[in-house]
Length: 216
Image (cartoon, rainbow, N blue to C red; front, side, top):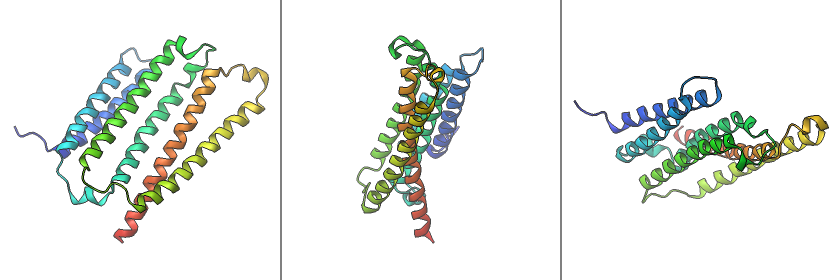
């Protein structure tokens, strides 16, 4: 029996990676009497590794060349940072107890899950850079898009930080007592992730708009 083409394998493994993320969120944050969270994490990591192998073996095509490396990286960043933000928001309640993070076992598990997403993102980005070895990865257009996206990202971060400051500044004493220091730290980290996600999203949109303008 002939094995599927690398491009088909990549699609299959990416779909399985998405299923793994879905199982991870379902198992970790819902009362399901099955180890779906653990199995989802395992499936996600395995699928990402096999996706990396498929990326190596996929032959270059005109369709791939039409999308610049910067745009590829931006869309991948949108997906991964978005997943990390969702995970951080769903796990925020874990940090409400007034205990240091090092003494909170649930916080350690949450950190491992988020760390897994970061590692998978880094591995996929590194493999794509190896695939594009010998090509010009950045030029003046990339610099302009990166500058514009970073400005939007900083603005988004500042907006969220100001929102947190207003929330804390105008909350009554009883409500402030509900917010532990680890919880506030988690909110600040999430605000940085939001800025990064917005940065990646704006970059992806600018690349896409520029590519559509050139093709017309």
